[in-house]
Image 1 (cartoon, rainbow, N blue to C red):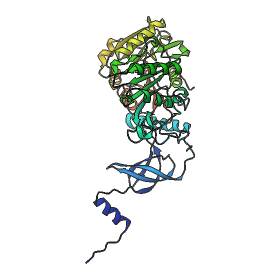
Image 2 (cartoon, rainbow, N blue to C red; image 1 turned 90 degrees about the vertical axis):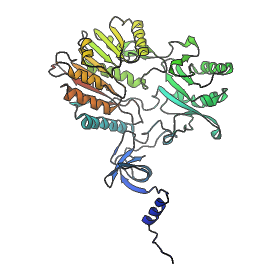
Image 3 (tube, helix red, strand yellow; image 1 turned 180 degrees about the vertical axis):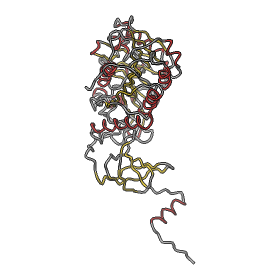
Image 4 (cartoon, rainbow, N blue to C red; image 1 turned 180 degrees about the horizontal axis):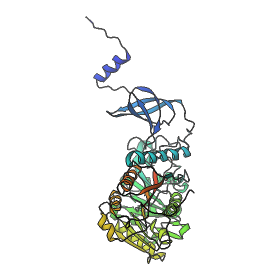
Length: 472
């Protein structure tokens, strides 16, 4: 006797699921917005679906890739109604390489998305709203990435060595021979770097090459897990001479980083022409990846801070002095504080080289553990600039909020690389400290990615006087 069950799609799916075989279904979805990973956001039966390759306003046929209790993820299979802001990605590796996520979206629309992300974070996390929205700061959309970490892998079936960014999904290295977001002189080197690594004695022991492009030289930091032979060193030197490359080597941890040739010392630097400054750095030091935006950002931040000649200014999370030294050209005194002793030492050296050491002071301190008494002990500041890492500056915000009105800086400019932690800290400054969020705006430091940088201006309660305007 045979029991027959109708083979409906639901029954087939149920039977395969019972056998542990998953069916990735197709769904028609209406895309409402973008998330921070540049995925389209849709809703289906009250559940959020994140859709790779989809843009706001589009209707797409998407394949469900993963189901979670609170959300699903999907990939676009077909665009049924296209956004007017969709463009053809110019890079042949887009969609495979993980370096970019938004090349299919018109650049001005990318900036608008990031501005919305910032405003939403301020409203929903910090429960604050800026008095005015600053025009977004943006610049070159290609050839802007002056810092990068390139992965290296020996893949025999693909012809030898691969040098590039990791693939978008997974840990494999993208098979790429050019990159539009890297400066042309770096992009042009990718095939040559593949050949160079392949010619070394142990190419499979080279996991990565870090790139740092200065105004006069390109630095390449080679991570090698086995000692280089004299023949390897000769190959590196020849490559460096032919392509104006300064080689740095890292045999073990970060403390082992050193120049291949000592004569290259201080060649790696970026300039800030508006302030007459040259900033030497090492390829392992934190510097902004986008030199054009960095210069514009410094100018904008100082204008918003409205520094006066007699002001005493604090620059927290000062790093190499990227803001400290420009501030010192305008203020009476600037105190730079940073968690890395190596960075503060280099900042002090740069201040000496430019004759600004009499107006600057630097110290090393963990700014994630400060309190109001520490802040009081520093003395009063007229202005303060805060430029923290992604973790934000919660301890600093709470210390500022605990000061009396007479002790507080009149104006704070906060440069952020995380809308979420900026919003959290803004909520503290406004709701606990009584500061007013005068303005905020997005900075497109990383075009074609979901990374959102921003700038916000806070004014102390009871402060009179005109607000600095910098709408350029």
